[in-house]
Length: 263
Image (tube, rainbow, N blue to C red):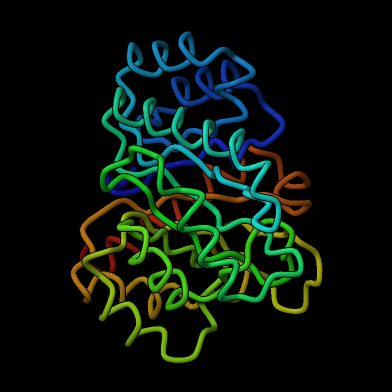
């Protein structure tokens, strides 16, 4: 397994933390992304201690956020969850805490951006936060859908970005955007996409879809990004294939791409 490949707990969405931990041990996966739902269900302190004792390298903790941006009275719970992810990330020496932008409701894009900055201002996160660009079909959990917009908002927050390849691979001027924002990319998340799908989430095993990884990831590497490439897959295609097969095939195929690109 290429040293820069990490596997997100999202890839085995219906499993609990203990099932993930056992699978990672059995499969020899030591570089992972953790998800707050699974940490909560297992008990934060116990799960963080187990991850630490297992010697896991943690690429990220997240996704988290989900602020209802048009309802400030409800920000407190979401903000507390972000802070708890930050605390866990610090304890585990994780590279980033991935946040989604939250639903704008009936706000304008600009109003939503202002409110997101305000909602996260009290969080003591240092440079751990990484704002993810999310697929435009899901306006309920994100209003930031392009990598460039994610960087603009993240800059206002003093944060970095999580480049979600699934959501930005077909963007106009992607290579130029990556070259411009490369120093602020904290994490690159990777999965595949089968063109024509109107389902969300509907990610595919790497190599089973249409994303031109050599071009997209080649541009990321050429821009100087030196962090992990985190496999994050979810949806009916992954359920049909089965978690273990989907993860192991994606690791193998991404390893080939990164090796070919000289990562």
